[in-house]
Length: 447
Image: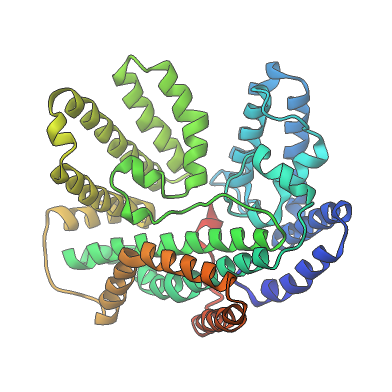
C-alpha cells in the first residue's frame, strides 16, 4: 500500500487519531501492529524475513564484538539470497532494513547502543514510515523516539501535513508527468534512433523524474512519521544545486550517503590515508558496490563506478590544486567549472542506470558526446515540460525557504493558519487527484 494511494491516505486519518488517543505504553504496541499490518499488505508471506533477520542480528549482538562479522555475514547472506536475479519476488524494503541492521551491529560493537532488546530492535526495523524505502536510519536516533512520550502539538501535526502534501504533489504532479515520456524514450532500441537533443532531454528528464519520485517518497515518510511525533532525518537537499561531486552525495539520498561515509568511506580512509592509489581504488570499488545495492545489473554497477570516478577525480584535483595552484582552486572560475561538470556528470551517469541494455547505453552516450545529430523526435510538450521542471529545480530552494517563512508567520497568526494552510492543502490535493496514475509505482520500490 504505497503512500500515494487513496486507501493509505484514508486509513491514515483514523490510524493517527487512535494513536494520540492511546497512552504511550499502548502506542508502542499499536505502532508495531500497524507496521506488521502494513508490511503484510505488500506480501504477508515475507513477514518472516524481517523477523528472522532481527532474530539473527539480535543473537549476534548479544554475543559481543567477536560475532560482529558473523552477524554482518548473516545479513548480507539474506540480502543476496532475496535480491538475487533468480528470485521472482523480493521482500519489500529488504535493501533498506538490511543496511539499518548492519549499522545496528557496528554501532553495538562500538558501544553506541545501550538497550538493545529484541523488541526495540524489531520495532526499529519494522517502523512503517521507513520500512519500504527508507530513509535509512540508525537505531540510536530512532529507537528513543519510539517510546512515543511526546505530548500532542498541533504544530507538529501541521508540519507532518506539510511534508505529506508536498510529497503527494512531487510524485503525482511532477514525477508521474515525466515518467510517461521517459518510459517511452527508454524502450529497448528506442534511443538508437534518437538525436543528440533527444537523448540529452531524456537523460535530464529521467534525472528529474527519479529525484522528484524519491524525494516525494522521503517527504511522505518524514511527514507520516511527524504525524505521530517522530522526527526523521532529511534525505534530499536540492541535489542538482551541488557544487562538486562530493557535494552532490551530501545532498542526494543523504541517509544512504552518510551510511556509506560512516561505515565504508571513513574506515577505508583511515586505513589508506597515506596511500592515495589504494584510496582512489577503494572509492571506485565502494561506489560500484553502492550501484550493486540497487540491483544485480551491470548498468547499476557502471552508474556507481562512474560516481566513484567523479569522486576520485575531484579528490585528485583537491590534492594537486591545494599544493600547486591554491589561487585557482579557490577561484570563482573553478567553482563554476565544478558546478557545471557535476551537473553534466550526474546527468550522464543516469543513462546506464535507466537504459534497457548495454547497447542502448553506449548508443545513447555516443549520441550525447560524439555522434551529434540535431532535431527532435518527440512531441514538443516533452521538451517544454522537461524545461519547466528543470527551471523549477533552479528556484526550488527559494520556494522552500519562502514556504518555511510563511509557515512560521502563520504560527503567529492563527487566523491565517486556519485559512491559508487549508487552501494550500486543497490545492496540493487537487493536483494529486488530477494527475493520479496508480500504475506508476515509486521507482525505489524495485530496489
